[in-house]
Image 1 (cartoon, rainbow, N blue to C red):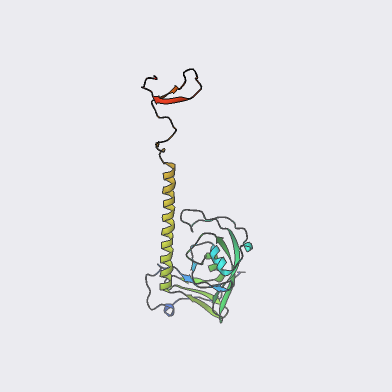
Image 2 (tube, rainbow, N blue to C red):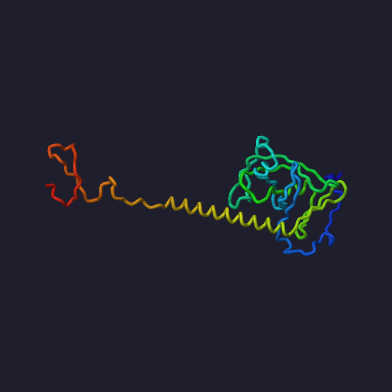
Length: 233
């Protein structure tokens, strides 16, 4: 017998009723939504269908008033968030996420990987959450639909908000990359730094000198440094 997932009986479609007055650069801008996480509505949550996990930042946990002692051990690091580097989460946490309105909403508990570096979004929701909510995105209309207890829930974004978030993300990425390149150059300069030049007053003996004892009978006593070409007398 087939085993159907919860909410699979609700059909979800898109048509011209969902079409904005004007579609600007279809598929270019990110789908940014505003769910309630725990008890706070967050305005910059990225729906990332290319991510296999959910990510939330420490600064967002501070905003939500969640103590860091509640974090659980993480399974390990991941790639794709920090360009060219492996990101190591500080832990993971299960948080309730709400979509919809008071009249028709869905709640699911999602597992988030918690990262300590700064991000331009409040959180990133990936494919596992799409599956949990049985949600269908439309990147052309910048809308997200999912089945709810009283019919289909439609979550909408705006091109203006998506554009602002995208610009902020690009600017932050360029700033991070620029800082990394500068740090790499400084490190290379430190490794390849030439030997320091001799300065006046240095106690290092110059080349072409010799020692002349002040007392010829005292071979272990005080001596003067003179040019090697000079007569000791």
